Image: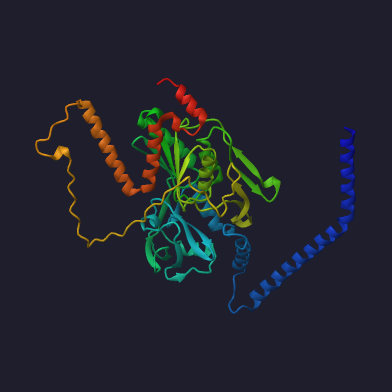
Length: 460
């Protein structure tokens, strides 16, 4: 014990000695750095005064200062920026779920405006804008070289007015124009429906209403189905979901997890780091899940997909997500404005950083691009499919009761609906097929050994 104490004391003494020896140079370096900063601030003041006094046209000093502030922030990363009082008010409105605009989430990549995702049911979605599109001009005015906020300002306008955006799309030889009518964007954060025995929860954004909408929508669909026993699983559709509020992503993840870490955020300092854990309770009592993602799934969507994937609570299907693994803090400023500053990176439960990498699906399933409709093409005459039942004089099947025949007809109808869904949304149909397969295999298909053991011990 004495050796340990001595070693500690010796270490402390050595630490004091070293500190005494280097304190002088450290203080000098800090003073030199401060002097350099003050010189740079004096240089900024000189340039500001020279512009105000000698620029060819009279300038608005307030706009000049705002531009300088925004330039400082946007030089850090694509997500840090200055929010004018108007922009800050718009952002607060968006998190409440209703605002005016086109309905697209955009970012900036190498000076070019890139669509993260169109929002479901919005003018941009109806006009055919796709995740990954690049916007190069607005109403004929180039947006190349503009800050992201300036480009967004060009896209804003009165509800009902037309805007022409020029789009560059991978696979298209030439840029093309798209006409969009601005409208009031009302975001339904969650839309629930049932396909066969599968509940599909389409989450379009993470705003104040996301978790309440998900909880109520899920309960309603379970009730319609006649109880959870009549449900084979849940598809959580996060495709083209650009993210939103971090706390809502945590609530949604927690809704399907019993315990364990959901996400951790790590800033430059320890005090800026945080860890969020799940609380007991699973809204669907361990029923199988599939999470759908694509290149338009970003930020909060990736937190949810990563948490459920790392805990082996869900199978992730689709294509690589966007890869935005940073946290922005909105800090109010004087004059009703605000500063959006990147303050941390977030990590999935296994310690993965999603930044620039995204979430890799467990099963990669591409969504076929919509084929252009050729109205001039003549409709093909459907090929007649013949079976034994179509043959004249064929024998009847007398081994089935009326109830069994009715059941076969219902099964056939469900199969036909599934085939129709596969034509409309291949990725979703694939996810539903996975849940059908897990349900058909029974308890042995459950990923959690404890769940499998409980199911096997349950009375049949």
